[in-house]
Length: 587
Ligand code: ADP
Ligand code: MG
Image 1 (cartoon, rainbow, N blue to C red):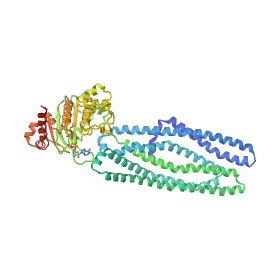
Image 2 (cartoon, protein in one colour; image 1 turned 135 degrees about the horizontal axis):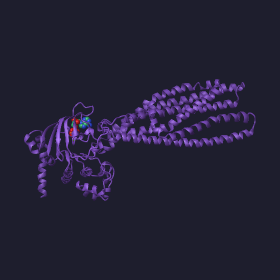
Image 3 (cartoon, rainbow, N blue to C red; image 1 turned 180 degrees about the vertical axis):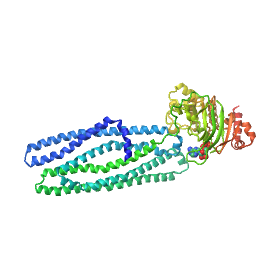
Image 4 (cartoon, rainbow, N blue to C red; image 1 turned 120 degrees about the vertical axis):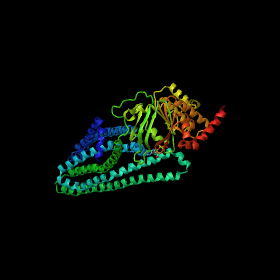
């Protein structure tokens, strides 16, 4: 429960509203406490002494108090909900900001569903608790303490007897709370699992259909869903056990009051009004006691949510700009790898070993090698998506760890094999890295990327909305929009994960032209699959098992008769034939 205390910093900001909620709370409690006393006087004076006028006045007073209570309740309800939704809003934003700064290696080890459920479900539980929860808890505590005090003053003996059943109830509720909080943690976790399944499945819908794996996916979802159901049911079972016990024990209290209080009236020790008022107070006390279980429940849920949210907030982004780092000036484009070794978190094997590489501005470096040889890993170190364990990566002579991250990444353009576009207009997608770019620049970038033509063929042109993840565009078109996006950034360093995407030769030719435009005048690292790109490179790096095993130009490497030669014979040579044929067709 102590975790809930962490939430205070979100509440502090809204102290005027919190104060207002507390004041109305005190008002409501006062009214509630006065009412049984009025009823006592109605019975003892109005009825007992036969004063009809007294009844009339009392009725008016009760009516007035009722109206006041209604007004206060409205204010309290509105303010507490207002506070809770503002807190939820702040927590959500805080979380989202935090997630934006987490590094690749964090995302490698985290299910996206868990992140999503933290932002939605866990925040909801906090919202529920900070709203009705906290206010009710305070309300009920004040009410309970006041009532018990009043009862003890009125008639200590009767109070002691009537309160007897409340004691076990109190402990049962506390125990319930201790039991239920870890259960909620499990509920939230399984909910995260469920979101992950759902999300993967929606994104991977095509793969699932293509492999006819629907029954398998349905079963997998069912497993996660059942776990959620089981987790919830265990909570509800506990909850259902507490509720009837509460009701029963309260009835027991009333019976004790009627029995012992009734005898006191018969013996003339108490008036009828006093006993009725006593019982009214007791019933009033039933409310906080019954609510206690609900509150503990809600607090447990909020505690679990807070714990999960804090776990996330406590993850320090391991890749950050160092304090008072310098912003990189416009780069020339020197890149140097100096004795770089790297392995992924929790992996045994080094993904890169002793990489030494010096690249001059505007050179084109082609990386080639079997799958898993470390090409992607190598280029990922340049924008500092990961930090190397040994050695250093230097850009224009500066260690990437020492410079401001934003100024570094803004000058590195990246085009990946499968380009993710956002669900927005084509224009917005192209301008993603430079939202302030004007129309002219966007069109120029699209033209250089050989995309202008197909974009203007759409009826909405640049304002065409690209479906979620750009699904309405063909692979080749998407690729060219991504190239335009990188072009618009005018980066000094470029990273291309060049695809052997299954596009027709005409599209392939266009993509290639677009890439040629893109590479002009920039230091380019290209993970090459196309012979034409490889041939154009100033330096070819051949990688195997995380090491650079050969380096040189096309002709030199061919003569060496090593791994490059093998790759050339197996994959690249055929392209040459196609290319020759295509050239022949064109002329
Ligand atoms: P390539 O791009 O040459 O196909 P990668 O650089 O992607 O190779 O991978 C190099 C090695 O690192 C492989 O053994 C791969 O399994 C491993 N690897 C790649 N990405 C990750 C990751 N995010 N976490 C753990 N291991 C990874
Ligand atoms: Mg790769």
